[in-house]
Every structure is written in C-alpha cells, then in structure tokens.
Image 1: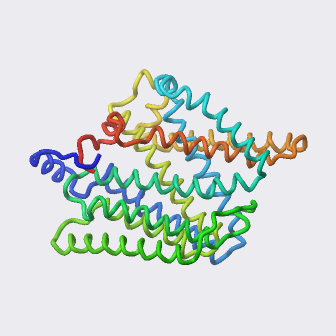
Image 2: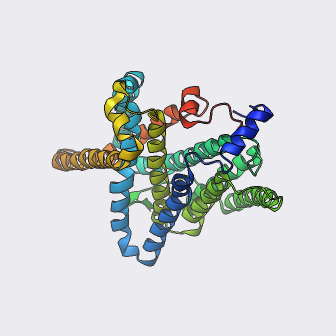
Image 3: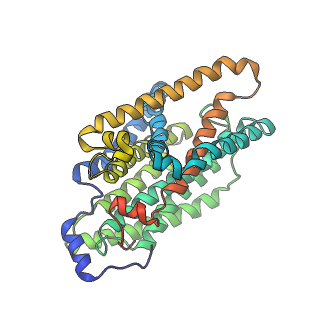
Length: 360
C-alpha cells in the first residue's frame, strides 16, 4: 500500500469531503475510537479497585463482547450463500485442522501449551487488528495525516512489543487460572524495548504537535493511534496483574471488532436489501442495527453456552480439559481466519470500506 498516490485534485476533493478522516461519521467513529477505549479502561479500573469483581466483569466481557466478536466473523463467512461458497474451506475444513492440532498439543504437553500459545498469539492478533484499522484511517484521507507512516508503524508495534516482553519478564505462573510458561526475557531487554517504544512514541507525538501548531485539523487517525498507545501501555505495562491488564486490551479489541464488522456489513449493503443475501443485508441496514447486534448476541449465547453445557456433561469421560480445548480451538481458528479475510490490499475490501486508491 505504501507509495500509492492520487492526483492532487482527487486528494483535495477527498480532503474537503472528509477533513477529519472518519471511516463512517463522527458519532460512529468517536464511539469506535474513544468510547470503546473508555469502556476498556473503565473495566480495568473497576477490577483494580475491586479485584473480587474480576469474575463478574470477565463474564460480562465474554458474554456481551468476546463470544459475539467471534460470531461477527461468521457474518462474513456464512450469512449468505456467496460468502459461504467463497470461504467454504475456512468454515468446514480449517476448524477440523485447528481442533486436531489443539487436541494434540493438549494431549502431549498439557494445558499450559494452550494458555501460552494464547498469550502470545492473542497479543499479536490484537496488535495486527489495531494496525489494520490504523491503516484504514490513514488511507481515508490521503496526504493530511499527522505522523509519518513509517514512524507511526514503528510506534504501533514497538509499544505492544514492549508490553509483551514485560509480561514475559514478569514470568507469571498462571494466566486466567491456567498454568503458563513464558519465553525467558531478561530485564535489560525490556528496558531497551521500552526506550525504543517511548522514543518512537515521542517522535510521533512531536510530529502530531507540530501539525496542530501549524493549524492542521485533529483527525480521527491521530485519535485512534493515541488510544492504541494508551490501551497497550495501560494493559501491559501500568497494570501489574496479567489478568487485569489482559481484560483491558480484550474488552477494547472485542468491542472494536464488533463495531468494525457491523460497519463493513452496513457499507457492503449500503444500496439496500440484496436479494442474494436477503437476511444479512436486511439486518445490516442502518435502521436495523439493534436487530443485527441482537442476532449476533443470541447466536453467540446459544453456541457458547450450549457448547459449554455439552462439554461439561462429557468431561467425566475424558482427562483432557475439553472446555479449554474447545474455546482455544475457536480462538485460534478466529485468528487464522481474520488474518485471511481482512487484508486491506484486497481491492474488494478497499471498495467496501471506501478507501480504495488512497495512499497509506
């Protein structure tokens, strides 16, 4: 995507049409950027003040956001015939492969291999999702975004890297109540990573301040990058407890994803109900957004709670942690699928999001 340009007239027209760089509009984008970050930070604040409420907040996060955010992916895979045909392997073949690998890992190494894989893979997945959304915001209005693309990229990755290295240095014995083994990381490595992250963040911040002093508009992209930094610093560095810190980043990631996928589906069917995808296009209309989220919530509740109930019944027949295996298989499948279907270099995805032809 780097190096793509538009004629000056096109750039000027795009800037005039969307000077703030909203992906959709101010109310939606401020909810996606600031509102979601505020909810995540509030969740972390609650459990820090009242640690005994962690199981309650975790349950609410998983039920209202976590499970629904996984189901949101399937609105792109199975809710209409064309999508199912296009992604048949991802729906029918890949889950079997992932489940087999997860089962084998748990059988050979034990539960710790699943929690360890989850710790590092979810960190990478969250970082990559946020980077992808940042790219979408940058592409929305070309030539007017504060912060050089390469410098912004370094800051976006170095801050989370600093965080996961610190978690490894802490070497917690458990994660979400499950045995954990982390990569050995020495204190000096964390220190150097912190210096690099803070240097990149300071350099990016200085470019933003310079742009604002010149009288340039504060854009959605700048707000998004700032929230990205705050969430990862708070979730991985300022909150010492690995579970409480993870909760902050998890709430942020889940809610962000749900809103982004709704926006994608809404834009995909912006011309109205499509006879070829009647149900999905109907619930994706702006006026039907409560129905869209209700459908996802009902489906996720039925699938996850039904699956958990079934696994608890058969657990007595197995020595393997069946619920953990099932949930992590779902998570890992989700990570793989997302890495395949949300690549911004794909022209159809760019066209649906309204960012085609823009420089990144």
